Length: 434
Image (tube, rainbow, N blue to C red):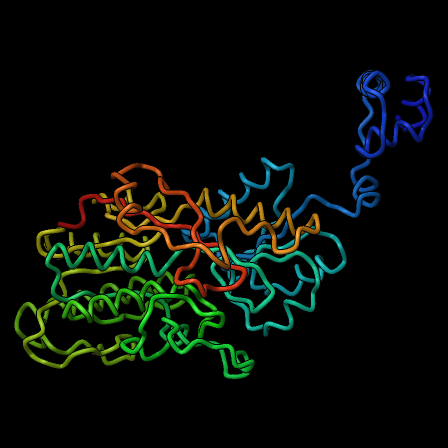
């Protein structure tokens, strides 16, 4: 087996010089570096990666924790993140908690023992904020609130909610069904989690959505799921426009049977309403629908908003029942993965920019690993202004990419969420809306 001594002998230099070349540390002249490299090539020398990592206290591996890779959103996210880290010479270790039946503890332990350089946390966690800050190793949250001191990257979901509202209001929608996860996710942080007194009462995550005076984010949301912001913003905009709406619970992100049941139940109720049976009853009787009106004059559901899986299922169910999309029923997808072009009808989608999201996560992680403080928060976090929703919509232009407006913007109104980088969304107008 070829070792450093063999390389040094062939290159006519010392073992320490070969070590400097192999580890990329210290000064070595270009001429000597070439001699060492030529010797390694000639002898077929392969550096011991474990030894190099021990020397540099680096593994060039980052753990990525997601709920499941079965969902198109997380599959697309992981693919973009792997490309981003690979381009910077790093590898991804994937943990899909629902698919493996394990929580994040094993991977956090690996991080603590320096078996990985950092972790991207994109799954729900029941650990309190002080758990994450006590790890004292590089962690970047994606679409999650882990507490003060943990940098986060996410799409600007308030902007996303306004984009959906503008589209549906302009198209004349009269009754919108929002299909999403358990409503309990909207306020899953306890009072203990919010006990430092810095909570902003105008947070859009407040349960009293109608009292939210501003779409600005607060330092301490009531939910660890920032995605709920688009639902709450959309509900507020629909209320202001006098448009009926209801919320349909579809189970957790990995509960695909729950998606199917929620969509079919929604269509069943819609069918009865169209037939004149229970037009005003938006309570499905199983706790899965948030009732917002009981007036018999409330029109049947004529628009559905949900993630790409929900939207695709809605297209299939509409076709099965002979409901015309978009004439009788409009459908808006929220995410913009590959599924929007494979649903049978090209779906209008509010698209998250996975490429820009991955780039910002990689930037922040590498900065944290290198001791760069807040992880290279470019334009996110404190200061700056929110991007123009109209520009984001116009920038899409019906394009094929999920992110033609890739700028990083602040959370708006000057306050903002500390340590959060926001990525704008774009509207990709297609055939499922009028």
